[in-house]
Image 1 (tube, rainbow, N blue to C red):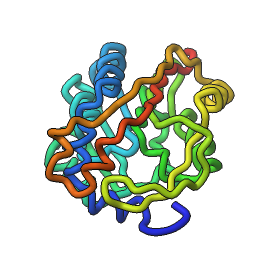
Image 2 (cartoon, rainbow, N blue to C red; image 1 turned 180 degrees about the vertical axis):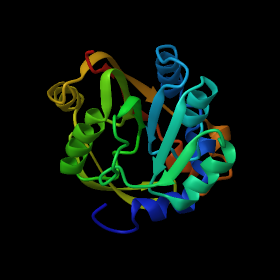
Image 3 (cartoon, rainbow, N blue to C red; image 1 turned 135 degrees about the vertical axis):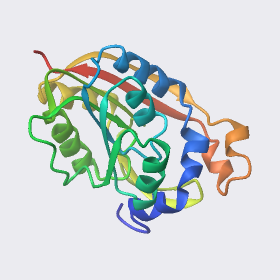
Length: 219
C-alpha cells in the first residue's frame, strides 16, 4: 500500500468479517476441489494469505495435506489456528517469506497480491512459482487488470491496490516455468446476507471480476 493503513492493520481489523463475506466464493471452492483431487495424502501445501483458514487450509487439511498457512495479519493467524488446528500457521509476508527447503507439492494464493505494487505482484508470482516442486501445482485467484496504486474503499477501509492484466499473469507464470493448465474469469458478488450487518457492507457487496489460474510445474 502506498498510503493509509498497512495490509496487516486492515486485515487485523477486518478479521472474521472477511470469512463471512468471502468465505464461499464458488470459483475458489472449485479451485480447491480441483487441487485436492490431484494431491496425495501428506502433500506439502503452502496457503499464501491464509486468512481465517477457511475455506482453503481447512479443505486442504481435510484432504490429508500437510498445510502451512502464512498471513501478514496476526489476528488472522490466531483465527486460523483456532479454526484449523490440524494445519500450521505463521505470521509472514510472502514478499520476504523463506520457503521450506525442498519446496511444496502445491502452493495456493487466493487474493493476497492486490495490496502490493505492480512490481511486487510480479516478483511475488515468481517467488511463489519457485517454491513449487517438479510435478507440483500452483493455484491462484486475483482481481485482474492493469491497475497501479489505486485508492479504493474496501470493507470500510481505505486501501491502495494494484494488479496485472490476465495476459501478464499468464506470461509471468510461464516465464517462471509453470504450465498454465486452465484459466478463467468469473464475476462474484458477495451475498447480501453475508455482508448484512458488517461495516462497509455496501462496498463488500459490489461485484468484482476474479481470475483463476491452475498451473503445474512439469515433472
